[in-house]
Image 1: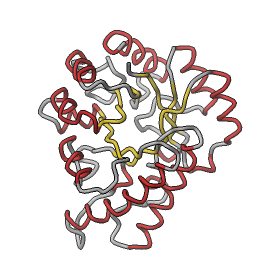
Image 2: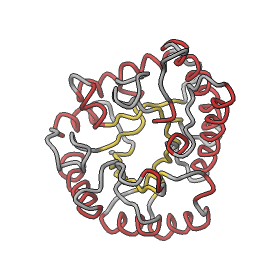
Image 3: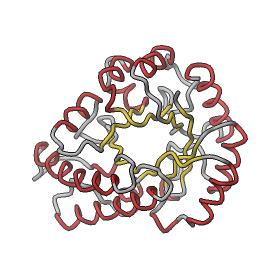
Image 4: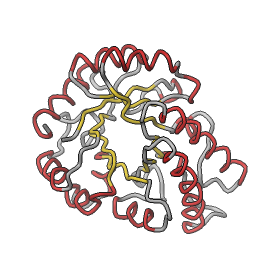
Length: 271
């Protein structure tokens, strides 16, 4: 059975972005536990921005897990990507993600590669960008394996990257890798833009899907848009998905309402 999770952002440069909680780890863990969530997904400025002892104490006191850690601050704060034409910048991007893998790995949480995948264009062709991405992902997946967690790769919509936009594109990319320690993140907001049929895309992705961002068509909390969750829930049951359904949504009209609506939708469709 799937587990529920909710996002907290600690990155001030991303203020206004699609993360539900914004007021620190203690606040997020407390409110998530009170509502019945299973875990927290953390979007942090970097691995040293979180006190490991404090985080362990919150995990122990609430019983919540750490679902995943985002790496997007590498792009937001430092402009780093794995497909940068400058080899030194690509190495810096990989080292940032490695540090986040090490941070999350201590809590059995995989790291997510989303915006840090970058784009192609100018002197870098699509194929060259995919080669750069694959080279780094192989290394990063091996690092993640040392913590017995997968590396999570997220296809994004066309307005955020021109590399890999659909689940099928993501599966094709995984097919060019030697490692089998990479899973796809199925983000319902991105899928709402790029997939002809979200449920069918999930079934086609099957065992390659390792994480789900539960959000509505307008990037508000699940249940505050016009997405039909019945076929999506059926598709996830059909592939025996037992990972996290994590709310990565705008805190609109406010964080508490977004969190409450999310858990209500989880209980209605995915329990």
